[in-house]
Length: 369
Image: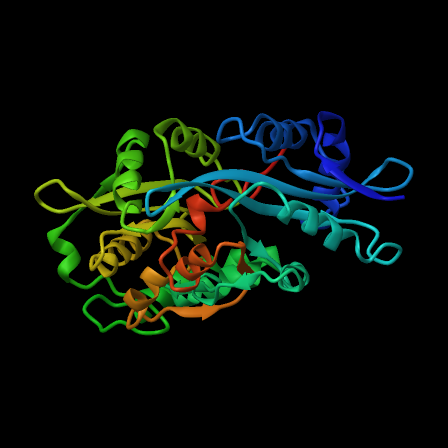
């Protein structure tokens, strides 16, 4: 008879195989780097010793057929200390012979000691499972935003994902964008122009991990439901986030007023000629538009062709008028038996996604040798 139990060191090889086949969609065998990282992330833990453990689904013969990676997230709400379960990496085999294995795995995880559970990377199949267990999909947290900076180069980069030889036409794309993206023109859906504006009154500069952590702790405090980030926890997360080879160079900035006060920050990855992936944008209330402008200008100046990222309610209003397109790729889903916590999340008063999710891990955007 099949069962669900805690993830153990002896399961690493089987889970790495599931990750390769079902999540990375590759037949290449899992290497030692991936196996070591799964052990570090889900067994050694990124946030200290907690009662939460990742779960595996085991067939009657003892072999592993499913995995749900759980990252413990200490949180707080109106003075209460909480424990959240970030249920991100979810892979289950045997869908035809055992179609309910994934549901059993998720049900077991949601019955743990945590105050709330969530995922920011839930696909359509997983979302249906969450919903069957009375979870809630958070629409304002579940959209991807896209801002095209250089239209010809963006179209070429999008085509190159299917036909790599398309990148040979980059010189032509640059010439076309030089005409389309003249300075001084108004912003357009098709391209970006770095125009003078309110952001010029602020200082946008690279930040050390120490300065970035200090700004994170300051800016997250405005949310009633938020991660309780001790400095060592954020230091560990930023070490994990140091490299995302598939997404490009890491860009980590803090935006400050002339007085030196941090009014926002951003963290993204991207190389010239590519599409940047934003992991985090944070801002003081009322300053979201400034921080987004700083991010887009920085990406444009570095030669990126577009920027994308995940929405949060506090950012959506500020993105109106910035010519961003929105699409749905995966959902942010939440589960809790506490109605106060659910209300905070459904009314946009919770800090989720990005650094509060799994966007900081190497599993999203990095290569494994």
